[in-house]
Amino acid sequence: MPAPATQFADRMRTMRPSTIREILKVTAQPEIISFAGGLPAPELFPVAAVRAAADRVLTEQGPAALQYGPSEGVPALRQWIAEEMQARGIRARADDVLVTNGSQQVLDLVGKILLNPGDVVLTENPTYLAAIQAFQTLQARFVPVPTDAEGLIPEAVPELIRRHRPKFLYTIPTFQNPTGITLTPERRARLAQIAAQHGLPVIEDDPYGKLRYRGAEIPPIKHWDEADRVLYVSTFSKTIAPGLRLGWVLAPAEFFNQLLIVKQAADLHTSSFDQRVAHAYLTDNDQTAHLQTIRQAYGERFGIMDEALTAELPAGYTWTRPEGGMFLWVTGPRELDGLALLQRAVENKVAFVPGRDFFPGDAGANYLRLNYSNSTPERIREGVRRLGRLCRG
Image 1 (cartoon, helix red, strand yellow):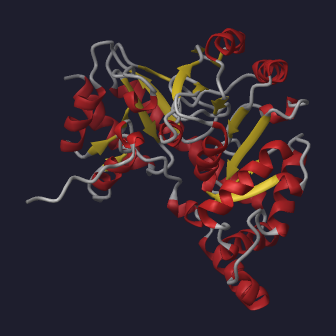
Image 2 (tube, rainbow, N blue to C red):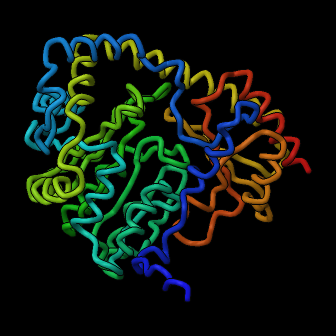
């Protein structure tokens, strides 16, 4: 007699695998030109500087670096992060900083402290795929905030609060993933004001803010947060390297204490060694010069992709032109099936992410997300040429 089937948790009925992670299994083949993953350029990783930092940490702090550490994070790194936030016009103390295993862990922790099954999360539409997954795990419901070419529309938020009583709003205001759109300063200030008036927590996810290659810098929403309703989230994955798995959240005390409890239950603490290596790297090297190298490279690659799309895509296709970050967002004709196009594209050795996975519902069939940071100029031109040929039919 066969054994009874395993009874998985109810939440698994609504979970879906990450299309990006599944695509990456295919695009690992070197002959495929991939615009799919949100991968920084590996040739720009500061390998020698990180190696030197690791050597110094092991030489000077070896036993402490290899020991268990505080759940909040290594004090020196927390202080560096706080000072960095202060330089960007944000009130911050080291005691407000929780270091995590990448910024993705922050989303998981926030969901755990705020969401019960059926609770509502307000999001941009489209929004970051892995955020949908993180909150979906807690059986959240998603309500999109109307958006336009300048990002989410703050004036739409009060009515959504009244109708749906959301637990929080999740937003990527700078070089948004997947669209590349940046929220204006006026809208940021207005959103912080609305959050204060209604007591709405705002999760400001800012992994790309330092990757601006043109235009003027804009302070984070947290800059306007006088009521302590904004939790600011960021990462070293795009500015040093994702392999370190280091992110952080700058959180008001009310939230920090709860996040710390679930962090302790999840993993005790983030790697003491990686944190100390990151701090040594940041204090021993000219981070501004390294960031300028990244910005210049990504700006050039965006320009090349923009020119190639202009030359290769047929009428009926448009795309965003971000001032920084790693992605642009293609809108195709209404009848386009992005998933079917992907299947044909992979056969022709080029890949992207179909847009529907960035929408909490079933929308987005005629959108594509293209990453330009992880391809050489030559591969960008050739990949877009192949994609254009498929779009022309």
